Image 1 (cartoon, helix red, strand yellow):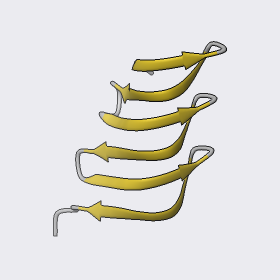
Image 2 (tube, rainbow, N blue to C red; image 1 turned 180 degrees about the vertical axis):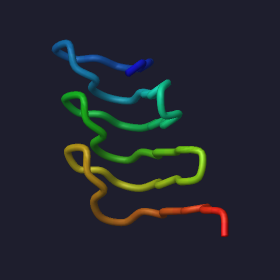
Image 3 (cartoon, rainbow, N blue to C red; image 1 turned 90 degrees about the horizontal axis):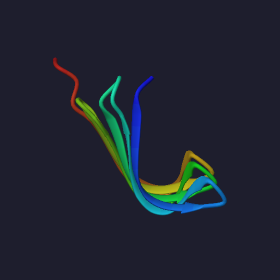
Length: 72
């Protein structure tokens, strides 16, 4: 898996604001991180899907907006 990260680090972990790209799947997460996981406000996008909202330890948590744009 090819990945790219541009953002803040702490104790050799993604921590603070940043952008993580999975170059194999095209998935992009832009937002807040804590200990290498999405944590706080952020946006995840793929070619046909997006979610913008809150994350807790890498999982969607609380309010957010999810869009699935699957062909019909």
